[in-house]
Image 1 (cartoon, helix red, strand yellow):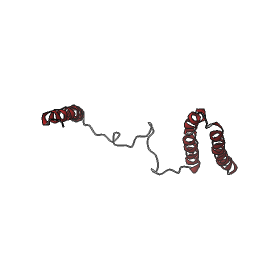
Image 2 (cartoon, one colour; image 1 turned 90 degrees about the vertical axis):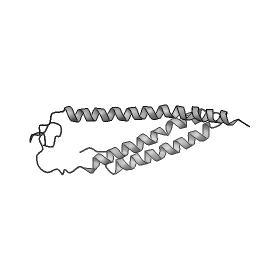
Image 3 (cartoon, one colour; image 1 turned 180 degrees about the horizontal axis):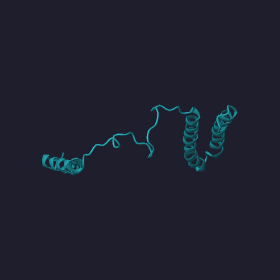
Image 4 (tube, one colour; image 1 turned 45 degrees about the horizontal axis):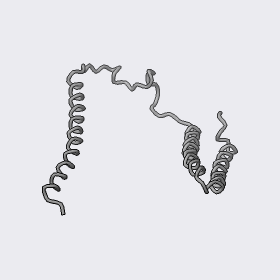
Length: 133
């Protein structure tokens, strides 16, 4: 059985390492607080009508704030996400395919997977989603 002084010394070393992290976090928060406070005290405050306008890429706002967005942009983004995420599965497949004893089974499974992707892409093409007008 360990002596109480050795256990206390181990606990002190354990908490000492976390105290360094805590001190570093406090210093970081103080640094940010001092920077924001200095910014607020030193900046010039001169509100003008031009400064209070909504700014969008250097163009003055004209008309209403509502704009119609076509759905096809979201469909392209959605198709990209689907195929990008699915392509991520190719990398673990390649490592399993290289392992001994998994070659034929893994190859068939990957062609089934790629078949599902091809069917999805063919469906999107047949629906006219991939035509840019």
